Length: 292
Ligand SMILES: [Zn+2]
Image (tube, rainbow, N blue to C red):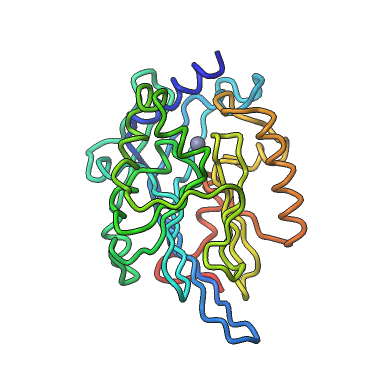
């Protein structure tokens, strides 16, 4: 039943449109005593999800009858050894639509105001300028423009790769599969992965929301350590009360990941940004500015 709900939810999401406010750039300056070069984090607007049925986001009736607007950011990390895109927003097909798109059953209304190409141009980049792309997970609102980064190497957890390319997802949720199927340069990883080998950009394996869900740790020298949440928590109340959406893939895994996340955040004294929390999105500087 849970599986059915998850698939239904994902399928619903994949039909969506978009909506919402832009949110750009953050940069991190990593000038260590050894002379490490500058690391920059830019935040961009990948659309908006109006959740008309917030009840999906808890195991109990806490949010029954409520609605909430979600931001839907994507991020560019500039490291001296290459650029990384983290997550890929809602589908670009939504850009330019006259009205936000509401899913048939009414649970979600989605929109996207700005294209990938246009937003990257603000920092002088094109889709050919990426060494890596990594996705927190492969739900529809995180893979939107992934296929535009064909020259990048996709860093993906083995569990996520098997899941999104497996028969079940391909049948039930073809849009997620179609969004990643043209990424031909693939690096499968298992567990935490230090992207550039210097500890400044690390994929942290935090499964449960999906089989290979991950979050992103960044060591920004001036701004300090940062954690981008993926969908480990969609919004602040769920982090505070450890509430888990009904469509998560594995409840126990999710709980373990939440514990690991909180311990790691405390150990690193990391600033946590919840990617769907509108206030977190709006608190980051706009492109082409950046956090230091
Ligand atoms: Zn998700």
